[in-house]
Length: 262
Image (tube, rainbow, N blue to C red; front, side):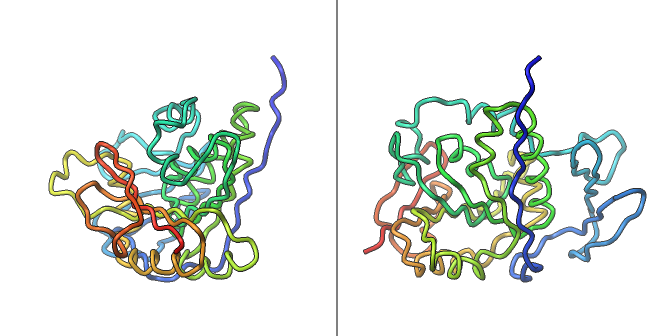
């Protein structure tokens, strides 16, 4: 068996994020049999973040519930990354990606980092910012495990810089000296009435981060940086986040609103 090269994930811990994004549950971190309350809102259905060989998120309740982790090696995220052609990919069109011309992208709402990972698979360098510490830690663990799995995944992970912080506070300073090609936003969609149809991953994200009530402010901040392209991922029926976009790239269930620098 050949030896796999190991690549460290660049993870930057910044000062505690602001309270703009509030979770809707209380969370407990379990480490070496010690717990500490993170003082989130109503502790009606807390989660547990358990660190072992990997970092797992458990929902409290009946024993035997399947834990959740971020996995870039198996499952839908890995399959998306294996797609060779970018020409028919709405996300690639939205960020203006061209074959052989990698971009620098700030993903200001990283979440589970699926889109950040997809863009890195296409060769782009991605700075992924997440202000929920729980999501940040789950993603950091997923990236680290992916980098140890194979040389090809280690190469992809090396293009991702994961940061913990509030994008509204960070974007202006980050874009002064090293302006990216694109700022990408994927704020939380309004909660669906068909709650049973919402995927588990999205339910977890909503429980951890809330409704992104300041997403319009984030979009305005992104556009004020002077970056030539700001891309906002929206539900296909949702109104534009900050005024009419320059163009739209439409998919089956979502669309990408593209704001070009005038």
